[in-house]
Length: 209
Image (cartoon, rainbow, N blue to C red; front, top):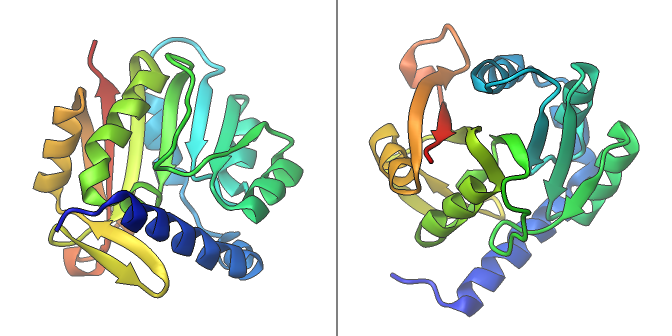
């Protein structure tokens, strides 16, 4: 069923409201999450000499912005939740933009890499091709996009007050290839567990052209 503009606006508003209502608990609950494997996966594929210009898409309270700064890079954050924008600015000292994922206004060819960790699954499937093309345009030629999403069987809907779309590797790969990316690698998380205990699909992509 195709979602109309009112449906999309409702999905954005309710999902962001849920994050806003739970901002403090979310920050506390994710503060110690170890995503060093994901950060390393992005950085090792970026060409050229550091420091790199990196967009932390859906930066939340700023945990990973602080890591990128500590590693010597030039990150910019983006989030749709006002409390997260304020937290991220205070925690990292970085520039942080308030934008929602369905109404991005990104500068063209501004970034060497985009870090989309636990973010893009909130984009309804029908809007993903457009959003992915917008991310591609924001990357410099040859730039790198990292994605990590909870995997599924290409279904979508509401889950505990937030909207999510849950892709398998084949479905996700098709979307990224159509949007003008080439695959660099993929893996499942958490590392070292049986596949049925790895709910996260991580993948790394290079802008073609």
